[in-house]
Amino acid sequence: MMTGRAKKDPATKDAAACACGVQAPAGRSAVAVDDAVKARNLARLRRIEGQLRGLQRMVESDRYCADVMTQIASVQEALRGVSRELLRNHLRHCAATAVRAGGATADAMYDELLTLMDQRR
Image (cartoon, rainbow, N blue to C red):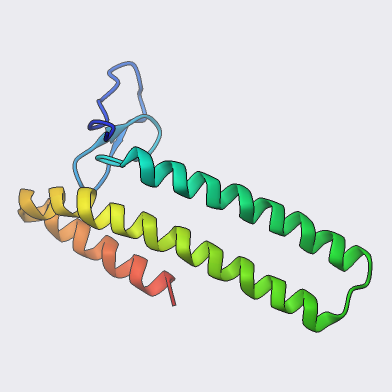
C-alpha cells in the first residue's frame, strides 16, 4: 500500500511546493512512498546506526586502522543502498508526476534530478 499525496495545510504559513507540486508544511514531502520500501529503508538505517556505534567503539579501543576503514566502507555502501531506494521512489513517483505536469514544474524537476546526480558522485 502506498501513502497518498501530501495535502496542503492551510494553517501553515511557510508551506512550500516541491518541484512535483506537492504542498507540505515547512518543506517538501514525497508524492507516494511504498510502505514496504519505507520499512526496508528504516530497517537498513537502524542497522547503519548500529554499525556507526560499532565504529565508535572500534576507534575508542584503538582497533587496527585497516579494520576500521573496512567497516567505514561497509557503512558507506549501506548508505548508498538506501540512497538508491530513495532515488528509485523519487523517480517513480515525484519525478514522474512533475514530468507529466510539464512546463516549469518539469523543468524544476529536471534541475533537481541533475543536482541529485551530482551529489551522488
